[in-house]
Image 1: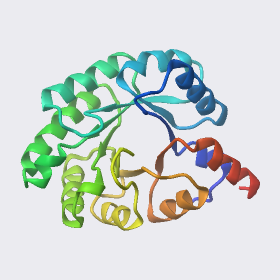
Image 2: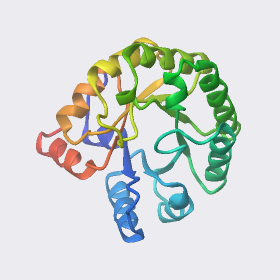
Image 3: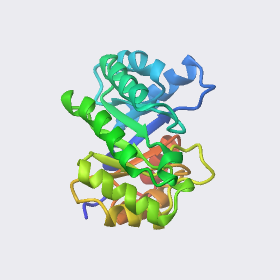
Length: 227
């Protein structure tokens, strides 16, 4: 496993700017943090995509959008349109929430068809798709089943959580995800990641991307430890 450095840690972070009440001043501040540390991306609301793409022009920080967010309750057509629209506005990556209630109803074919449609839109534009499970609402068996569907579809990432559920990323759930997708599919952990120790623990399980608002604090810890 590759040794962690401050630069590598920063490049595994999607700096989260998703809270519904965030003002444009707060979005500006978040973009500045992401640019300062050279994170992988900023993860933003749909109407912030073009704004953040302009703010981050000339940097190596990507713009990641969330669709069907935060509960996955919109129709397949809506998720497809949201993704297309965001990509047209400058999104470099798409994080989409699965239809949680239908998965819990055993309707895996619906989930598979929906993800295939969204993935098709993303693939045509060369945009990676991250699939958000929201593990807090799923059984261990459902997490494994969702992982296997994503494996069949060959999506780029599977992701634990939105950050808007009772719990976020858990080591046990991440291990299930890692066991049920091929090595080429990456894992994003999100929800409650606030410390360097959490990031390291999850990295050792096989996580390569982290959604967090605690970027500055985690990087400061890494610098202090001499990574």
